[in-house]
Image (cartoon, rainbow, N blue to C red; front, side, top):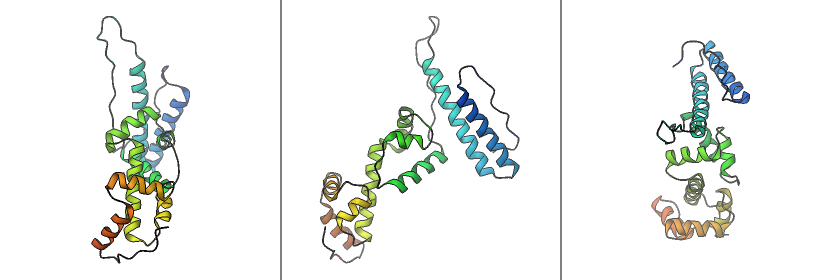
Length: 200
């Protein structure tokens, strides 16, 4: 944890002014949070500062041209998604699961490039952002099928699928059975009435 004020990051010829300004702002945010004993906010600001520094270190390493006297290999800066990044991503996904958005929109939630974000995301979740979103939508649909009497058409829309046909096609591929068949068995196992309203 941080107990002393933070110096503004020094200027560096290799960093754009916008990046230096953001680093300075984050350091100031951390110092201000500590001044009022808000350690959680200070930690988050410093985590974000560390992420920003790591990102530019990685870009600089990739752009570095090896000299004839040194081995020709790329220097790679490794890191993982931080706790605040994971919280922000999961909050965004939960709130927007029924909407259409691309990976760039998701990466923008934590200020990362699409390529770098994709690597970190896959390392943490074990699947691509697109596959993870499909997994979340499938889990939302399954929960609604067990806990509510909504039609499959309504559930498909709420869970972010285009329509009932899209839900049925993806569900059958993932689960090996239709949503109707799975729903009947799952509701019986949960002790809920097996009789449902019409499917559409």
